Image (cartoon, rainbow, N blue to C red; front, side, top):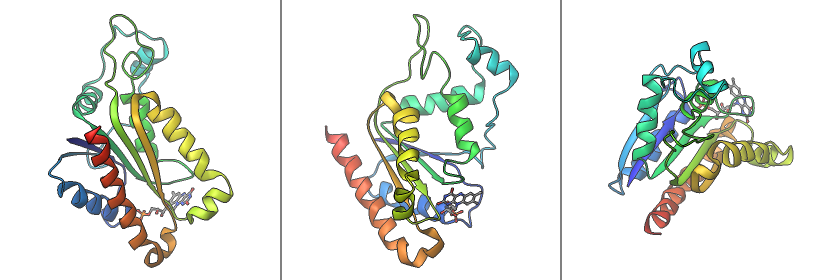
Length: 199
Ligand SMILES: Cc1cc2nc3c(=O)[nH]c(=O)nc-3n(C[C@H](O)[C@H](O)[C@H](O)COP(=O)(O)O)c2cc1C
């Protein structure tokens, strides 16, 4: 089982980094292969250049795909499961991760296929994990949890994933109250990956 974690947080002092470490620990217990795209550490370019827009915006699939994007697409092709891990900033993922979708989901690969384009593989399982300052109950009450789930699961993961889930690990402003519950949610999510692996 090959797991790709697309991780987007600038600081190792963050709670999201602690979640990453705990998640890797649960995954390693399964003896799965883990690859991490640490977008800040890699200094991943999140802005689409004018040159790239020429390809994406005008569907010129004969134009070349940038080398850093091709590397990410190769990681996707090897993965049986992709986990996106990030803090929720202004009700979405950080711009760094948004830019990963903008650029790595290139036309002809992740959408808009034609006879000559190489289509993205269908991934058996996708998991989006967002840490949030607000408690889950509040994010649900204001319908933000549902909005974030719709955008992440229905659009960004979409039909490219056979099974998909989103975990919002909320309430991080009072960490001592929520941390144990978050970590048991992570462990349970890893158990579900095992089930999808057997299907
Ligand atoms: C720029 C910024 C924007 C944020 N926006 C939201 C938000 O829209 N909703 C929310 O619940 N929390 C928001 N937060 C709080 C983070 O989601 C929270 O701090 C998260 O758990 C990340 O913690 P960490 O940075 O220690 O990993 C925001 C934090 C920052 C720094």
